[in-house]
Amino acid sequence: MINSSSINLNSYFCSIFTMSIVVISLICSEAFPIQQAKEPLRGHLTRVTIQNDNDYLLGIHCKSRDDDLGFHILAKGELFGWKFHVNFRYSTLYFCGFSQGQIKKGVFEIYRANRDFYRCANCTWKAEKDGVHGYTDNPKKGNLFYSWLK
Image (cartoon, rainbow, N blue to C red; front, side, top):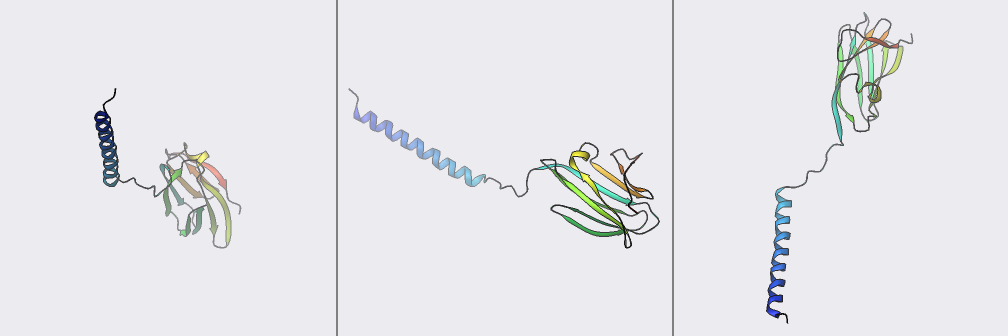
């Protein structure tokens, strides 16, 4: 036969144990609040720099789907650059329109993650006489990526 006082005692200890777990959980949740993600998942930091190596003023307007970096005019030797985190889907894309006064020189993909992620973390572009040259993290020799339209 089971003693009713031992059942009540077991029930009492189970209740105390359960209440203790609840209280400890509440205290921990207040002491260590979960940080809400303020930004989406981010990849590595990438820097893009464009340099004008032409003798004329070069207009540049760069954007992505989410960011419009504005219109900038670069004299010979001047730089324009920005940095960003590549998104986790590797679909980050920045494109820039180039102009010389009223003459449109072209709109080109300056950073495309599926092309540039492993090519460069510091992506340098130089606007030269024949077009836009891209450089890797080893900036000794660039390749002509885009020829000017005019």
